[in-house]
Length: 428
Image (tube, rainbow, N blue to C red; front, side):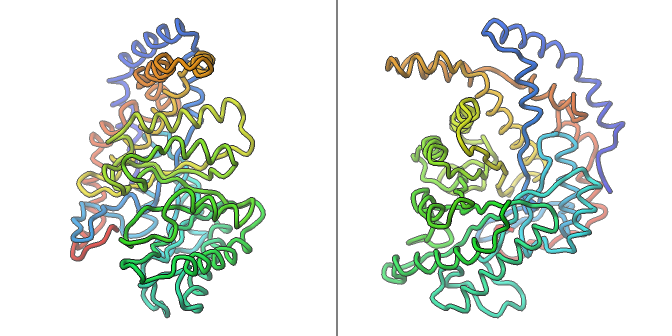
């Protein structure tokens, strides 16, 4: 197991701890004048975790090319070790979300490795958007919505297999994303195509354990460029309502048009009890390949403002799952995932600083300027000392990226794991 040495972690922390404690005390005094206890905020941040995707620790790519990095994980056990390092340094990513069949292995071996690394397993992810070796039916023209009943049955069976694997490793949710759609007008009958999808999804839902949740994910486009079967949150909401009480909508921040008000979508789904969770990332044009908070950190904060509002007022059934989902083409995936996990924590901490009583008052009196100013006051507060102290208290790194680089982890695993070819396109 190639984790970061305790001596490296302690050395790096010792060089930064004095300044951190001074910054933490200064911020604590500032927040106290606003009626906020910094230790209370730190405790909530410490308890917050976001799952990492197993596929996220590999280098991504485009439709045209992929340029693998050094020390790419060879299999799920390498992926888990990389995820273990992210959790070791950030103390913010205690769970891993697996993708089947990419990560298919003996469940006992998966559990043993996860326990060794101090990890657990989050939602399972099925794959019916690409054909696998030996697969009888092709998904070129769809999976759960395919015109061929046998192809739909194959896709359903794969999702049922994911549930069985998940049951064996302690997962409690299944996330379904399909690439089904059409590329030309007239290629598919929209109504019949959606009816086929709902019928297949109901077959999967019927096999869901009583303590599980089903998350369906909407995506505006890609790989289908004319129409997508589950293209927006409205369609996703209809699916969740049709399937039943254990079905929820998953919101991927990158799968929306640039001007869509995602935080309002989140509020609507909370209001009607159908917010299942998130895939956190960022986007400039409409897909999810960028690191969380790299384009619009204020939007991320506004999403968390809705989440903290629901948490504060104890909205019925409010229990969203949180996971990162992004592709890393030009950065070290481990570094990007660490930074993204910290950005999610940052948005949560900032949202905890919102003066909710004042905000409610300004909203009720239609004082738009003071209402938005109240949000900006929280967003502009530098909460880094809270995040860093939470990590330090839990045995993590004050500066995870700095410690990671000082440890030379990437070079170490590159000496163990053989180089991977970059031939061919594809995101994984």
